[in-house]
Each structure stands twice: as C-alpha cells, then as structure tokens.
Image (cartoon, rainbow, N blue to C red; front, side, top):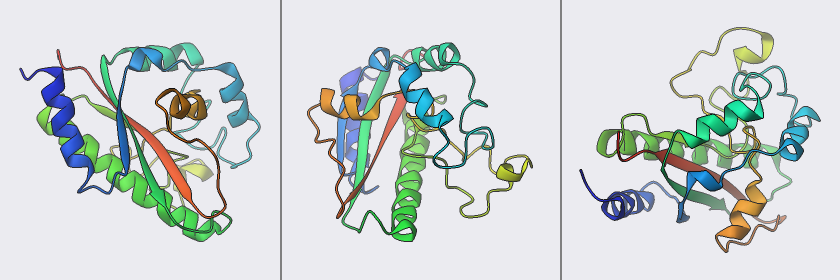
Length: 188
C-alpha cells in the first residue's frame, strides 16, 4: 500500500489535467456538519429542498452526515474557478457542470488507484440532468452512480473551510468558484 503522501501526490498530479485550479490536503475529521448551514438548505432558495435526492432531507440527518464523513481518513479539498459574470445564470450553470465533471473524473481516478469506495462531494446542487432532472418531479434519479451531494447539502460551512486552508472565500461578480472534496480511506 502506498503511503498517504504518495497518494496525495498522485491525486494532485491528476488535478491539473482535470482543470482543478487549487487543492489542499483535508482531514475529514474537520468536516463538521452544522445546523446553521443545513438551515440554509431548508430556506430552499434553490428550490431543491425536499425534491432532489442529493439534497436535504433525503441525505439524512446531520448525525448521519457526520457519520458519512467520518467513514474516511484522508481527503483533498479542491476548487475550480471560472472568469464569468456570476449574475449570468446560464454561464454559471455551465461552470458548475464543468466542475462536477472534473470532480467525478477525480473520484474515478481515486477509486481506481487509491480506494474503491472513495467519494467526491461537489460544489452546489447536483446538475447532472440540468435543466430537467426527473427526480425534482418525484421520479427516481436516472443517474444514481453519477449524482453527488455537495459539502453544503451535508451541512459543511464551505466558506469557513476555505478560510481554514488560507483560500479567499469572497464572492465576486466576475468570477465563479466551486469547492469540492475528495474523501478516501487508504487502509481499506
């Protein structure tokens, strides 16, 4: 089994071809789901609360989210950033889809090389079937093997997480930044 440093080096090397702009080691034990963040989901500004399988309450309680995150011992925080007008909903959605494609490719590489149960958490709600997700109308998810929850949906304060690794967490009108995490357990 490769050392944790070797695993992190391998995953960092993959980040550049996948268009991942920044990455930092992440201890999954620092991911603490918070009621305050989950409340933002309950406010339902995006319209997915109670409708999407990758959003609360379908993701379970905060205790279940904590247990899910604690199942991993290693992690990599990553970001993709795009120079676009953040007020342009269509352009922003395209950046989110690109981010989620890169996240799934990173996860696939990690599953192949590191841990077959590695899991990626994406930035923002799942947009796999955007704009017409059948699950929003009560149908089953058409791509359960490709749909992923976000850090936010699990109750993680992504702004605080970015600040903890020294990244600028400011929202800007001329730039969209998506933050995700790859989690794995090298001992499995």
